[in-house]
Length: 33
Image (cartoon, rainbow, N blue to C red):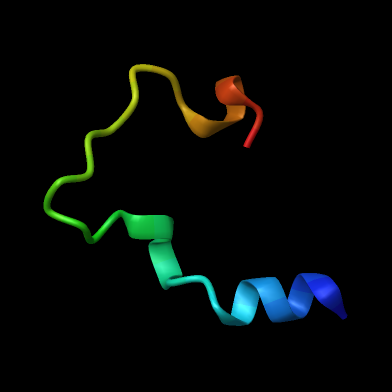
């Protein structure tokens, strides 16, 4: 239930549509995401 509420308020793409977003050198799987 808490997870669902957190996801509901989160923008899709986790900010990837933000023009200031800089892709990290490592993939999310290497970071731990």
